[in-house]
Image (cartoon, rainbow, N blue to C red; front, top):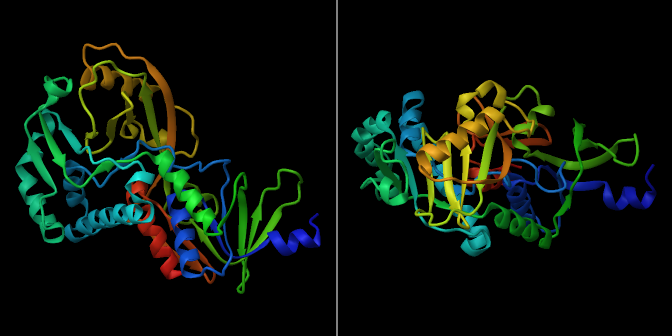
Length: 375
């Protein structure tokens, strides 16, 4: 049971946001900026943000050339360009909120490694640049001399390289912590360890049922408006929406002596990605090896994909080296029939901003801004 003091002070809010990832935090940021006298609260089921926002590889990522060309095979040119610009604008928005220093942004470059089967991508690179030029006013991609040997990659496997001039790298832990501190300084409340079990839109307000760790009685929060921003986990509240979880496997080595590359790298249409981080190699991906198993919200490691990452690390990235793995983790992304995020009104007082398509770092702040405008 709650006292009258608790009911009056802690259970009613103008806006409640579910999820304290990039989307939830930026939604709260813009709501509080627009309505400073309104009460805003974020509910997070983990003790720290527990989705993909803090469990990614730290890429300020907009898509590799081969990935965008694959998009052209499955969507219109206009749709591909729209999504590319959405990522670009999202990164600019995130930088405008925090600045480069508070998100650990580094423009060390982004490169795609091309294997023998990928070389036809080079034939269409100019076409891709022309498609994007009208919006960017510059070329997004350029062919660079194959630096495989200079970087220490296996030259028998890596046959070419493409630079993406629109990407960079960030420290997502630093970025998320500073974003949390920023919204809290504005008066946004964040309740961690608070799992939402159900919601009811009752026309004039929304009742939000949360698990109570101290009692079998649920905690009932009341909000004028509810905004759902928990990405892959939204399906537990809204099973009818087109959201499919996708688990990403990641490993990180111990420091590698004489490491010869910096920046961020992709290959195989972005399904694999790696970067240098404090003298170590952070390497992730491989979801395409087992889509069915990886369509889960379970954070467990997939041993077969972890072995595949180790094999590619030794065979492609650091051949003839012995490296030790220091850390492993997973993150849960959200996908659907299209790569467009879902930003829509669900009922009178409930809004949704989910399905980041593995590009939450890039588009999350733009989704949060869009939600705040619509709500």
